[in-house]
Image: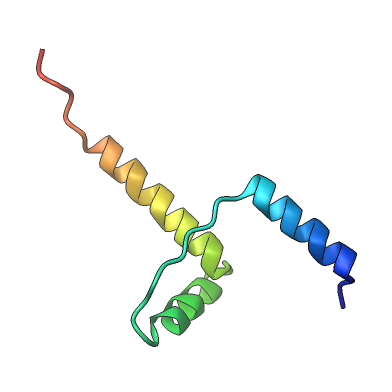
Length: 68
C-alpha cells in the first residue's frame, strides 16, 4: 500500500507530465472498451490514446493540399 508521501509524489508527477480529460460514455461502454483493449494486450488508456493518434494520422493523410 502506498504511503501518503508516495501518493503525493505520484500526484505531483502526473500533474507535471500529463494532461487529463474526462470523457463520458454510455453505460456499459467502458467495460466493452476495456475488454476490447485487454484482448489486444492494452490498457483502456493506451487504447484510447492509440485510437486518437491513428485517427489524426488518417485525417492528415487524407487532407487535400491547398490550391495554389
